[in-house]
Image 1 (cartoon, rainbow, N blue to C red):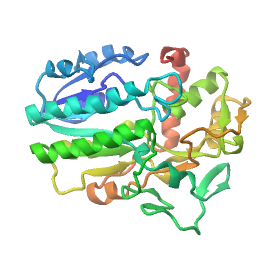
Image 2: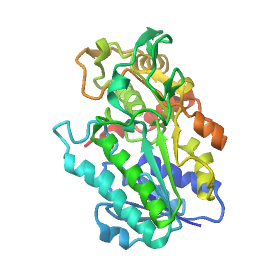
Image 3: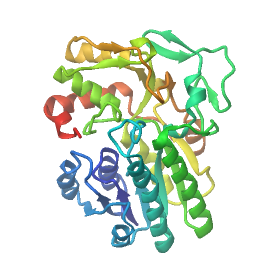
Length: 354
């Protein structure tokens, strides 16, 4: 089996590439990256040492994709993953669309030409902002949780957001491009007869992630805490009670292995996340950092930002019931891994800074 990983020098792509080399047999693995993101060059030599061939290719350019060797499967881990991308005044909205949607179209044309399977790593950000922002929550031990006695939106329970939750815009430019990419992938797969899987992931985190405040918040917070760089809680009364789930990329491997083997009797879209048990607020993350790295002060800004939501946890029951999938890495283990890496790499934030 020949597997192509896009965005292979990013955090998720590089971790999956190494895991595939270690866990799957009879696989010829190669990847591509455009090296636009600062720090991505760091992963090239490590991948080469692991036997992964890395090609320079920009997914926005069809000719770059045409020049890649033939694969049996694509795992698409390339994206501009910031919910603020294209609207924050520092990034181009057109580039977000080109990276996340036009790039996917070029990959789907590749799959059509080579009859290759396609696995898209999508996001929890495809789910509608309004019902998430209007969710009734209560503060418990420094973290929001949904009020039990309320009329939950369709597709949501106290366990989190399921695949049946609304995807009606607005969901951010990032979320919209990923949602459109999902629809096109499923359409291409049906029309041209190749397998497609859509994995909607929660917050992915671990050592080696290029931490930024708008992407990889767990990694950014721990690295900035250790360096005594400015940190502040934004929105929600400036208390840091907003909650996100956390998932280590290696926990994707058990379901990816099944998808690559060609299972056909499952739902094509599935949530994969840490769930309630692997979720945490910023205030709770700060408490963990204080215990592990020492105390410090955190700033506060109660002004809300666009697309901010108080509680975002995915419900992965479908993955558990249909695939036998479960989270294997506790959030505390993920945080320890990030902290150990941060202590060994004191310039990590500067390496990945824009």
